[in-house]
Image (cartoon, rainbow, N blue to C red; front, side):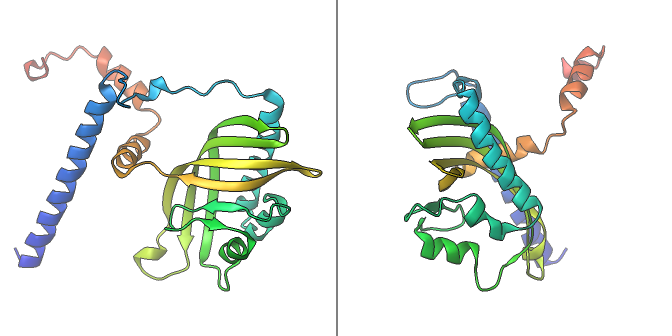
Length: 222
């Protein structure tokens, strides 16, 4: 075996060991009961009910956002989704160190001289809305995306991602308009665990129940 192969194998083993340690640590943490120091399981967090009318109105804006991305007509977003009456819109992008504030920087981000996207799909789920003040609403939701960059080699391979999102909407004469869009990624350890969970096929629960129902007599499984 060449030295390069040995090095690659060692690197792979180190990555797998780190991933295993991360998942084990997260499993231990999330299996513990809720504690004051901030260790909670997913079942400890439940959104309160949203106002049905407000929920339907904000959900309609998000559905239109999804349709715009599905059509690859991203240039419609500033005029149909964002609040152009707000002089200081805010965009917190997960891939940037700095927060974007104001139309000069947002327009440059949304309309760069050369668009680097080959294709982009976007969707959302688990929507919660709350009125902050008359004509001002907050939305929390999960979103996912599939993206292909215009570039040769590995960077041009389609990839998937997911985040939590916090948005603020202002009520205008023509409906609700987005004033803030903030992506809220999970921490690295939590993201790895969640990514591993998402890779499990939807029929796993059915498979698991079938396994439990089997009369397996192998003594090694006792």
